[in-house]
Amino acid sequence: MTKLGFLRLSYEKQDTLLKLLILSMAAVLSFSTRLFAVLRFESVIHEFDPYFNYRTTRFLAEEGFYKFHNWFDDRAWYPLGRIIGGTIYPGLMITSAAIYHVLHFFHITIDIRNVCVFLAPLFSSFTTIVTYHLTKELKDAGAGLLAAAMIAVVPGYISRSVAGSYDNEGIAIFCMLLTYYMWIKAVKTGSIYWAAKCALAYFYMVSSWGGYVFLINLIPLHVLVLMLTGRFSHRIYVAYCTVYCLGTILSMQISFVGFQPVLSSEHMAAFGVFGLCQIHAFVDYLRSKLNPQQFEVLFRSVISLVGFVLLTIGALLMLTGKISPWTGRFYSLLDPSYAKNNIPIIASVSEHQPTTWSSYYFDLQLLVFMFPVGLYYCFSNLSDARIFIIMYGVTSMYFSAVMVRLMLVLAPVMCILSGIGVSQVLSTYMKNLDISRPDKKSKKQQDSTYPIKNEVASGMILVMAFFLITYTFHSTWVTSEAYSSPSIVLSARGGDGSRIIFDDFREAYYWLRHNTPEVKIWEEWDCGVGGVGGTFDVVVNKIAFKWAESLEKLEL
Image: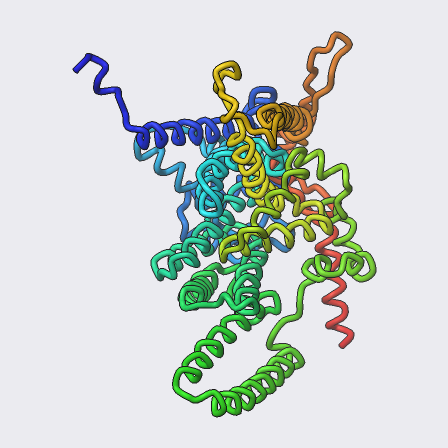
C-alpha cells in the first residue's frame, strides 16, 4: 500500500464528502454575504424597532427568564407601559440569551449586542442546511444543493436577515422551513416520531413570529387536498392528528398566543380538518364492517347530521363572540381592498402595499423564470410531498402579490422549486453530452435522428451556467447596495467616490442619554427611539386612543 493509500475513498464516500463540502460552502456564503453592514458601519443594530428586541434580550440575559416573563416595562408606550411577557413572541430573545450563556459557559466572552447583531446571519446558515434537506426529500441531493446555494444569496430573504437586522423574521424562516421538512418526513413515514418533531418545530415557530398562522393553515389545507384527491391514508391521519394535538397544546404555552388556537377564526381551519380526519377514519371503519347498501344509507344520514350540527355550533359560537373574527390584516390578505376601505392605518404601512412586478425581479431574479419549471416537474411527478410544495408555492405567490413584506415567505419556496427546475434541466441535457472524440466514433454510434445533440446540450448547459452566475452577481449587488444600510447610520458618496458616513442620529441619542436623564420625547408611534436614547417616549397615538376609549366608557 502506498503512503496515500488511506486517502483512497469509495465512490459513495467521495460523493458524500463532495456534498458536505458544497453544503458547507453554501452555509459559509450565506453567513458572510450578510456582513456588508458590519464591515462598513461596525457592529450596530439597524433600525429603531429592533432596539426594543435588543433591550428585552439584554434584560433576559442579565435578570433571567422569570423576571423577564413578569417584567412591566414603563419605558415602552409611556406612560401606559407594557407587560413584556404577555405581549411579545419570546423565541428571538430566548434564542439569543441561550447562545450568549452557552458561549460564556465555554469562556467565550462576547457582548449580548454582538450576539443580537450576528444572530440573523447565523440562522441564515441553518436555513441553508434545512433547505437542502427539504429539497432532497422532494427530488434528490443535486436539487437540494442548488436550492441551498440559491437561498444563501437570494435578496428576498437577505432583506430581513442581514447582520444587525435583529427582528423576528431573522429566525422565523428557519423555523418555518424546519417545520415543513419535519411535516414532509411525517407524511412520508406516517411516524409519530417525525410528527412530534414537527410539532416541536412548530412550537419554536409560534414562539418566534406571528406568521405561524400561515403554517397552521397551509398544513391543514394540504391534508384537505389529499382527502379530496383520494390520497388520504393512515400515514396522513397519524401525522396530522399528532401535529395538530401536540402543536396546539404547545403553542398555547406562549402567553401572547394563549387560547387563540381554539378561539380565533384564523385557527378554525386546522380544527375543522382535524374533525374531518376523525370522520374520514370512522367512515373507513364503517365501510369495512357493513355491506355497500347499508354503508351508503348510513353514510348519507351521518354526514348530513354531522354537517348540520357542526355548522349550527360554529354559527352560534361566532354570533355569541366565543370565536373571535378574523383580524384586519388577515382580511387584507384575502381581500386586497379591505384595508384601504376599512382600516387605513394598515394600508398606510409601506410593508403592507401590493408588490410591483419590478420587485419580483429585484428580489428573486432568475428564480422568477425557473419557478414554473420546478412547478411543472412537481405536477408531472405528483406525490404527497410535492403536492405540499406546490400549494406552498401557489399560496405564497398570491400573498406576496397582496403584501410586499410577504416576499420573505415566497423567497424560500422560489429557491426550492427553482433548484428542482435547474437540477432537472441540467440532468436532462447532461445525459445528451458526448465527451468522446468525434473522429473515433463509428457510424453506428452516431445518432442520425439527432445530429446536433451534443451541441444543443452544451449550449443549454452554458446558458444555465451564465444565468446562475448573473444571479450570484445580482444578489451580491442588491445585498451590498440596497439591504446593508442601517437606518440610524447614513452614508453617501463623495465627489471622489469615497464613502462618507453620517452618524448624527446616534450622536444625538448619545447626547440625550447623558444630558437629559428624564427627557420625554413625543412620538406618533413607539418606534424604539427610547431604546436607543435611553429616554421615555410619550406615544401620542396610543394615549389618544386610550383617552377616547375612556371618554366613551364615561359617556355610557
